[in-house]
Length: 141
Image 1 (cartoon, rainbow, N blue to C red):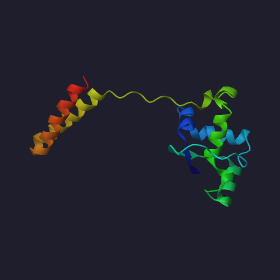
Image 2: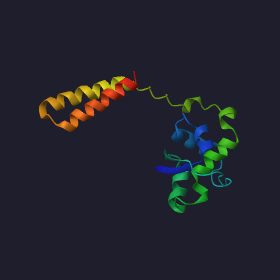
Image 3: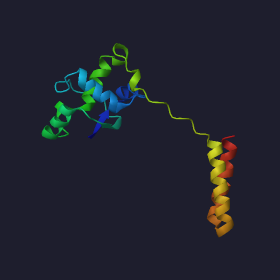
Image 4: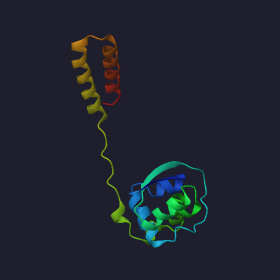
């Protein structure tokens, strides 16, 4: 079941780089998620979490998404305040960092594709975009 949680900035950054779905299901196994303190701070990031914990799913369906007893934001913030990264081994929940994008290579590919399109259509708008990409290529060299 996909559940949405609104995390504050500190909590979101604390768990950045982790599989939030796996972390949420793990936290539900080790903590009573039905009696957690209220969240603090402003909403920063909305995250989608796939929950597989059977009791949570049953309670969520019975109580509804607005119930404090099934608040994933409360669960994540509770774990954040307990500094769970240092009290439990969460290494199995880390995600690989995305590979950096080579912008100059992507611009070159886009320019090549647009040149082929321009040869077939002679559309002046395409020619203008090619010019813009050429300017951007200078910036990202």
